[in-house]
Length: 224
Image 1 (cartoon, helix red, strand yellow):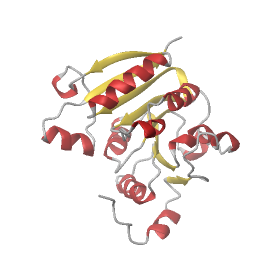
Image 2 (cartoon, rainbow, N blue to C red):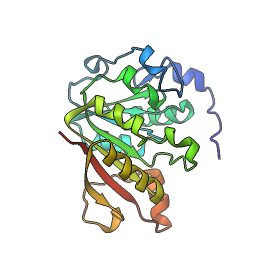
Image 3 (cartoon, helix red, strand yellow):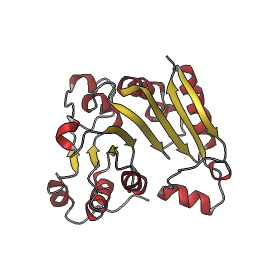
Image 4 (tube, rainbow, N blue to C red):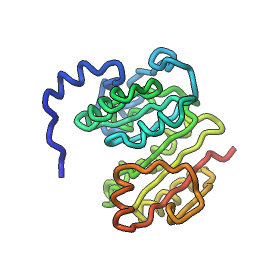
């Protein structure tokens, strides 16, 4: 079900400049992005210069805000295209007084226009839309076109962490990472019955746990 438009959304967005950066374009075409250049200067948008982490598709922000609180020595930039959802996370971050979190409202195709090359330590893909129909696979956040973008912005020792409840999407992702030169680590077919520690449970994740559905997780690093 589509979320109802928030009351006074435009006014709330306009007054959220302390946490929110609104992108210049919302195209879903990879070919449009190279024509745009809006590279962010992290020294200007964060109070401290620290390792930069991305969450692509932050939803209502449970992961992002928890991550920021648990990792004060890291900065996290949360990317979300839905302004109606984004304003909820901004309000949450402000209420909790978080200083190491910022939000960027763009489509993921435009990441190269905003994020500098080799500037990101960690990328988090939490329960991304699987786009199950084959004709929509270019929009999957582990499609090779996106993986090439991640290669550009990741540091040499950077890592991508993916979680999903969708087995077919997970299988697709494993094949895509492998074919694009990534090394897979800590692959789990049932995260919550594994020995992995430090997991931050998202809103979606809790719903799947309540239904006793397995959560799939992996880490991917670029082979050098």
